[in-house]
Image (cartoon, rainbow, N blue to C red; front, side, top):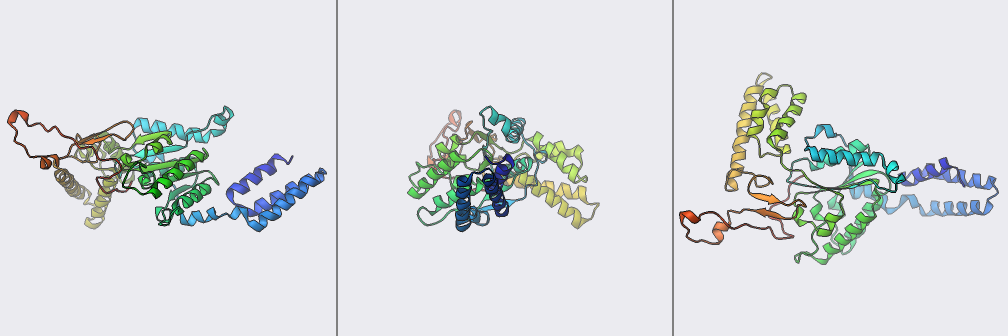
Length: 386
């Protein structure tokens, strides 16, 4: 049998697509087998290598997926840069440790967890968390491109999906599906065509066959649209909700490290006023303050902060009035909705019910009774960025 170092190089060359290393390693194995008088095996390997050069196995069609089906991003966000709940941080840290010590787990016939589903309203760190996991694991971060993946011809989307997963299997990586509800839709929805059902079937099979060294992360703002079988494929399911007042205060502490002009002493007061904004909206607010700082001069930070803060609080109130009361309808704990543990049972009070049925009530029977359950497979709002 060939030496262990040659076998290791062969695997590295095959998974990494390094043609030169592959040819050198195969030639070394053939020469070693001939020196051991294993001429039949050496001839067989030599013929197989010739067929390999003619058919170019390493240059399979899935190599084009790097340019067409995925976009490789540089993972620059770390877990220390994110404000996460204690439970989510522990879960993610444990999963990263399992991936880093996968050899120890496999020696006990165990596999590390590698499939994560992130849900929650847009702008609260789903994409950033996926990028941070890739950075902590020091692996490539692949973002799926739906514009190239979804095709109009029958069966072509499923074929491209198989090519995408084949490409992901070539090496350790984080494969990120943003807006995952575009692919994993409920198959029981009568409004969907048979093509999306075939795509979901192919997706489930590909997820099942994906090796554990590929970390699959999916994110969606509409978990109620996902197929029930899709939920079962993910070992970790977590909700990234809008930040609480305490989390906003912690976030301001991070901002002070980047921009010392922000006073940490007023972070608690600021956080109380900004509850209802997502992390991305808070980041936009900081950018607004820094723009005013540049345009108004270096000494105008405090006045600029007060002005921008007043505008953001006013916008938050306007957003609440647009929904019938001062609250953000996307917040799971805002009093206008509740979400079950698995993210599927959504219930939200709707002011539209008063327009559906007009009836006279007395003062003792004025409590609203109706609730609206969003229909399965249909979206009540346009999807936003994660």
